[in-house]
Image 1 (cartoon, helix red, strand yellow):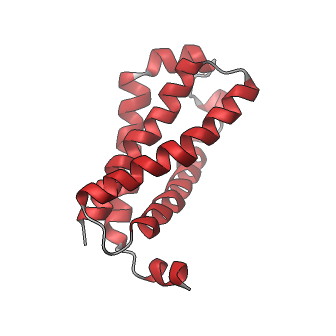
Image 2: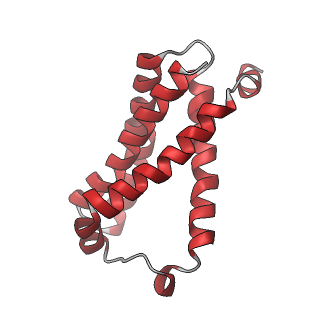
Amino acid sequence: MHLIHSFFEINWLPVIVSVILSFVLGVLWHSVLFKKSWSVLSGSVYNSLNHGNPAVIFGLSGILHVVLVIGLAMFIGQHGNFSSGALKGLFISIAWISTSIGVTYIFAGRSFQLFLIDAGFYVVFLSVAGMLLGAWH
């Protein structure tokens, strides 16, 4: 019952801002900071020829990030603050997301450097999103 109750207490404006932030950070992360390394290490280049319709890609990514941020908002709850939100975002990103990515990368034979780029995005994103969600009541 507590989990359902926490869903109805979500402040939706910081959820929306956090999802928009995910796209801004994603552009910086994958187009400015790590574009060359990520492209080489992943063997992938984003374009419509090899990845499909950009509207579908970004739309589905947005939906998945909405679900992710809703979960973070529920975990932080109404009594969070700037620092507790950041710590909870950091915890989730390291304990659940990075470990899940790591296991997949081990079996896929992906490099540790690529793991650091991809998992690092979520560590930064969820820590900052946690700050926003915790501080913004």
